[in-house]
Every structure is written in C-alpha cells, then in structure tokens.
Amino acid sequence: MCELRGITWDDPRGYSGLEAASHKYSIEVDSEFCIKWEKQSLYDFTMRPPEELAEKYDLIVIDYPSIGDAAISGKYMPIDLLMDEKTLEEIKAQSLGDSFNSYKYGNHIWALPIDVSAQFSAFRPDILSDPPRSLKGLLELARRTERELSYKVAIPLKPLHAHSTFLSILFNISSETSASDFRKIGNELLPKALEILLDISEFLHPKSYNTDAIEILDEMSESNEIGYIPYVYGYFNYSKIGYRKKLIMFKDIPTTSYIPTGATLGGAGIAISRRAINNVERIVKFLKWLLSKEIQIKVYSKHGGQSYNVNAWLDKNVNLEHSNSYLNTISSVIFSYVRPNKPGYTKIHERSGKVILEFMKNNENINVIARELRDLYI
Image (tube, rainbow, N blue to C red; front, side, top):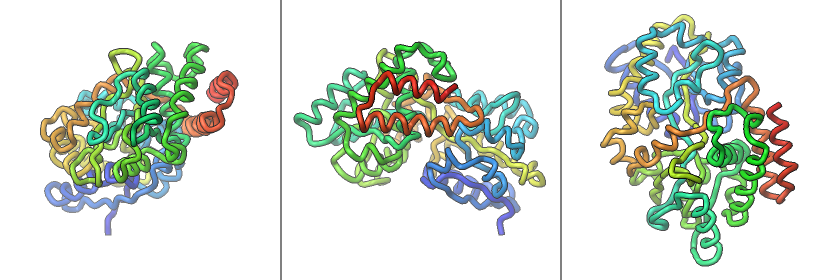
C-alpha cells in the first residue's frame, strides 16, 4: 500500500507525466517511494478549498490563484523552508515566464511549478492554414465563418474561462501588464475589452457557452464544426498525432501589437501539506529529481505532461512530438498576465466570469457591467 497520496486534475496533461515519473523514480531511485495519484475535475483544481485537500493529501497539484488561500490555511509547508536555496534558484532559472513567482505569497514559496500554460489560440490546420494574428483579423474571420465558411469560431465560456479570456483581452489592449487588479486599469479599458468580447460573441459556436478548455478542445478535435479558438488554455497533447481524431495546433493569442502581451497565465504547481511532515525529506528528494531538466524532457513531457521547464519548451524532440506547439506559443507565456493569488481570489475569478457570461448571452449594458466587475475587486 502506498504511503503517500497526491491529487491532480483528471486530464492526461495533469496526471500522465506525474504517474510515469513517480513510477520511474520508485524503480530507479528509491524503491520505498510510493505515491498514489488521485484525480479531481478541472473546476475543482481551481475552486476546491486548499485546506480541504491538505487534510487528505500529501502532495497537491494546485492552481496558483489559490496560493493565498493555501498559505493562510496553515496546512501547507513553505517550500523555501524545506529545499536548499541553490536548488530553488536552479528551478527558478529554468521556469518559463513568471511561473515560479506565481506561487509566492507573503515571504514564502508555497508550491513549485510543474506545468506551464497560458491562453493561446487553437486551430485545426486541415481547416484553417493561417490563423489570425490580430484582433482585427479575428473579427474578420469570425464574420467570414458566418457568411461563407463551413466551420465556426469558439471560445470556452464557463465562468472561469470567460473571465480568463476577458483578462487576456484587457491586458493585451492595456499597457498595465503587471497590474494586479482592475483598480490600476484605466476606466476606459474595461468597457473596450467588453465591447471586443461582445463583438466576437455574435459569431461564436453555441457550445462556447457551456464548455471549459478541455470540453471545447474535445469538440474541436472530434467534429468539423469548430475551426478556430482565439483564447483557450493550451493542452498540447491535442497536437500529438493520434491523440484525438483530428489534430489541433496552437499559436499565440491575437494581439493589438506585434507582441502577444497579456495572455492569462495558466499552469500548475505542486505543494506539500503538513500531513506529509514525516516524509518531507523523501518528498523533497523526489521533487528535485522530478523538476530536473533531464526528467522534465525525457520522462514528464514524453508521457503527456506539459513541462514548466524552459528547456523542454525549446527541445527539438518535444516540439516534433507536439507539432511545434511549444515554440509557437512561448511568447504568449513570456509576456503573459499573472492573475492575483491573494486569499479569496478564486471566488472573485468565478463571480466575475458569471457576470461576463451573462453579459455576453444577454447583450447587457457595457458600462454597467464594467462597474460591476470593478466593484468585485474592491
């Protein structure tokens, strides 16, 4: 029976690489190391209270917007008090974009990056050979699909994803790419971002309104109804030949400039609960091994994980296996927008998404909605 319990989310990107690496470690490094990885939904990955998870699991794959909640719960151990400074600096140096810093809260590091993503554009190369690079091009394509093309544009708009897309647009049209919340954004920009969303919504595939990233990518890969998704968290396994019926490729988000700034950063970190207090040394050794360049490229990425490590993103074989999706989107990660991780943010995240979703469905007053969104952050 495995002594350690871990939890991740129920997509191969979330569990396949972890399971393969854990198995290899127990065979080749520490025969007494055993961890059972359990799975939860993508929604629970963001919204399930971290303190609840810490009661049941030793290692928790965690979404960075919930780091503040984990920190104040008192049920997690700061990584910087467990791991030596040299190793932490090595992990930080190899972390893509701001992924490492997104797991900091207060004066401590509460998780280590294991996975990196952001909102990218996704397209079916057999249907659309040259996806739009600008917001103007996106709207032109959306109008064309309505008039003359056999496929439609889609965006996953379940609340967490609706809010993420709104943030990607907002921080792409804004120069305040490091702002932590709406109060630092010019009053004129919130209505402008909402107007862009409303313009797009007129042409969206109807399944946009009740899907998350995985559900819309599944739909795109199984039928010919959706040819382009301008904003979706990247799942690069869909770019592997044979993973699904039809191959999906990923590129940077549409932008108002030559640089794809503002894409909402995604990804996942790995945190240690106080439940694991008697196994800390063994867990830290495993994490050092797991996050190393070689294991990230040759084990974690090869078996379906989406590495945090910049060396994996630049690796020739990793890109060959994933239709070059890593290299095609690396700029969106480097210039991405990092959501807040203060306590309670995930609830703000979801509430904001619900407001945006209803706005898009019902064509509500833009200025009223902008004020409502701003008020949610106060």
